[in-house]
Length: 630
Image (tube, rainbow, N blue to C red; front, side, top):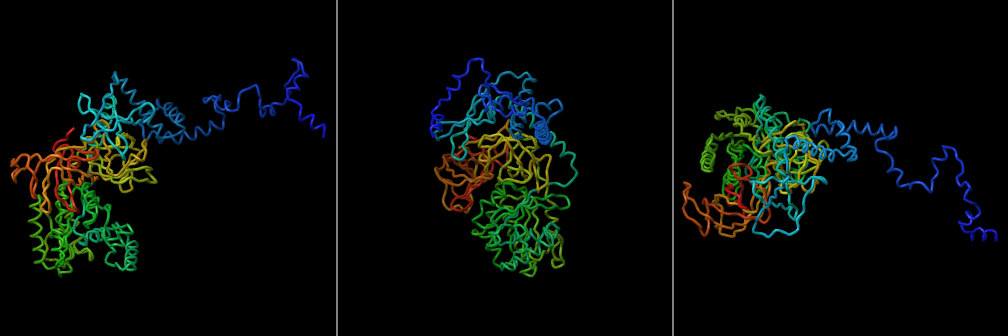
């Protein structure tokens, strides 16, 4: 074992003591063997890959690179408009972002923006701050939201003087967002181009007009049954599927709900036998493309009904004709009056009344006329001045839905489908800055990360850049769908699904607003409004009263900070600085919220400037925004 100790104790440096400087340390190897040997006096292993030139890839990597580029470039062109001269920019952007389409699109849009600015000789990048002053002290820590390492998310100023707008999201510190004037003009020009294209397409259209119809009424009035049976008669529900619903409803002991299950797809809704959320369906008449919004009628789900009302153009009121049911639905405890007041206060001006369950009273014309007289007087007093159609129907039997029946020979009016077809086409404010309320955030197989909601004003197309408020973050529109069909452009009035990219999903929340970058929506905590109190209000409103504010798709705690004045029925000033506001009174008040909310003047954006006020489970007032206080 001594020989092993000699080797073990031998130092490695002893080997070099036996050789002089002329000794050749390297041993010859073949080229195939040499490439696998590590040279101690050469480069480190970690620097071999870095030293390789990116412009001289090997054959296999070149083929792989070309394959990926061939797949990515067409998708990138669909988002960013380009010509052949920009082909190299597309390749550089994709390689620099490791073939990430979203990041590459943002880089190309930044380059396009900078090129446009330089071509127009726009000099200077003076940043304008936007801030919001409020009664609540703003936190000292702020954070700047960045699109990339070189671009900052920005908001334009309302006037040349510097202002400050702060928006809070999810309880985080306020996001300070800024935008240079040159970039604002670039975004504005792109938005105007989209609006001009939308107006040109609308002028060339000769097909059907699109309207959004909400179905309202007291719980168990038969709203879902009527619309489900109508969709079945029009062929939008197959007989096979209808047979499935009929069989399942019998097993559940709810055979009369088979048509209601067409719109009530949720298992809890079917188990409880009531609509709990807005059901969305599509159908067509002779001259209209109708987006159907089936609203819940139960008192506990009034907030969901308000969400649907903010998306509607016209309304269908369903009341039961059976003895005792109409009286119960039309009394103060019923939802008929509250629903009609809400849709009127939120901007719906056209309405149809379907008197359901006529088969339970043997199609009695006297009972029908009595209900018509009661409803017509009330609806005209609420403010529905235009012609109101009344249609006697039976939802469970399908009578007078798509065609008139012989059992109601005394009725000389249109069927329900014909009455819907006679609605006047609503105006579409395409030329105004883009506004869209987000009602749902989800992930789609075709769109990826997407948001759903109604477009209030403006137009949008794939490739457009938008801002989500109050988060203050920008995003890119990848694709647009309506009823599962891809759209090249969507305009005001459309209820669509929009696939987005370039933004974290945490900033996309229900109740947020997608808006124009050059003209973003205002986010404030205090505004002045004109309200009208309801007869159902039990306690007068005083300074400091705490209420729940329902505005577009949000419900926010608020309180009255100042009672300015009271007006009489003719709109004349009756009293300044009142001590309280009683029921059935018109007044001018100042309202404050704890968090900044997205709001607009009712004269500029009708849907975003109207709201409802609720307290203790009742709707006590409705109002419009008169001025925004900074």
